[in-house]
Amino acid sequence: MDLKSLTIKKVKEGLTKKEFSVLDLVRGYKKAIDERNHTVHAFLEVFDDIEEKAKNVQKLVDEGNDLPLAGVSVALKDNILVKGHVASAGSHILEHFVSPYDSTAVSKLQSAGAIILGRTNMDEFAMGSSTENSAFGVTRNPHDTGRVPGGSSGGSAAAVAMDATLLALGSDTGGSVRQPASFCGCVGLKPTYGSISRHGLIALGSSLDIIGPITRTVSDAEIVFDTLKGQDAFDSTSYYPSEKKEVKDKLRIGVPRQMVYVPGLDDRIAKNFEESIFKLQNLGHEIIDIELPNAPYALSVYYIIMPAEASSNLARFDGVKYGFHRNGQNLIEDYFLTRGAGFGKETRRRIILGTYVLSSGYYDAYYSKANAMRDLIRNDYNKVFETVDVVLTPTAPTPAFKIGEKIEDPLSMYLADIFTVPANISGNPAISIPSGTVLEGEGSLPVGIQFVANHYREDVLFSIGKSFLQEI
Amino acid sequence: MIERRDVEKLAKLARIELSGDETDSFVKEIDSIIGYVDQIQSVGTTTPQATTTHSQTNVMREDVHPHETGFYTKDIIDGAPDKEGNYIKVKKIL
Image (cartoon, rainbow over all chains, first blue to last red; front, top):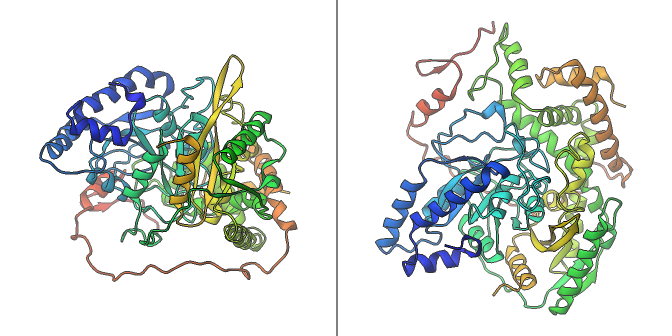
């Protein structure tokens, strides 16, 4: 079986024509994991119930049930809960936490016939852009194992890139689905804020977090998104409008050159970006110069709002409820020791930063100011979507960097998210699409371009993505 | 400018133990991050939150259909490091 060329549609056809069984698929992926995971370290765990689940789904298929994701393998980022399985968020503090319930995303996947293969490595609590911040070791980029896969959903992107799953779910707070997708040559979708339930997603920044698929094709991302989207009683911020809108064939693409051409932009990325613009023009789309005057401040706004929200979300990890515990003389000393030993360096750094921007005396200058700026950025996007259908930028300013290259300098790591963060600040949907490769030493590395659309216009992203990749 | 005693105070507020070396590196790193995010201070000083124009909708539901009492109790208690019967055990605080 050729796992490389599989898509959700081909899985459906193959199962219908009985060319292969659900068990064949699961065993095929298990074999690929066994072959490559010891080098790449994309998976933290392969679940021991996958063959049993495969047999159950096969039975449903044989009985004639039409399941949209029957037999489709999914790798899950380690912060998405599955009942009865560990979800550690890449952290020692949750190393032994077994979820008592399924996340809504997992319930929907399983009802649709998907098989959850296991959980993938990530930066601790999704804090990072390289997957080097995991408490359980680094993940390597399958295209060059000396380099990072991106992050924080690096394990999910690497799992897809090494053909060890048909697709994966990640979570995106500031680019954590799109940036690793671009580093690994995959498609990565960050949906509109609230469009997929966050119930059962371990929280980082609650006003920014969203689950998103990492896939090989745009069509697969679309099918997964359609399965997962919609209002959920367990998440009061979840919502998706029911009416369908028209998407034109030829789209108006806004290019914010002022925002793209910044110090730190790799020349090869700039060249690939201009070639992508040329290709889009040749496909009949219209390129329009636009300005997003406040978007360049998005990264600053992000590094105030996200740590603020993280510092309060992570207050619950106190050594009382979730397994990990360090014993002190009294309860407060238990807290200090448990949180000091259970959280890694980046997590502690961000909790302290969040505590700073929320502390009395600095609250107005940082947290309130950042929220006011957030409105300005959102208004910038609302305004440009009066004249264009999508906004185009590179996904990341560089291709995959070397393991260890940025880990000692947090600020340079943060700059890897400079193009992806604005869509989280504004809540807009965005997609990273593979746009070819750039030369690096003897080999080449994949790179991606990013399209951002108006709220709830994922349909526009799928249309332009398919057009760019010439997917039928 | 972030100073060493600021980081020590914040770590205390956040209930995080830091080693001496780590406190030094955090002072430097947090100061450089704050130096970067301070760029927003130069932008048009509208009164914070005066520009709020969210096109957001409240999603309400009735407070009904709770899960069966005790449905998750065992699984949750099992996850706690210290327990006694159906209770999570903590050190005396009074």
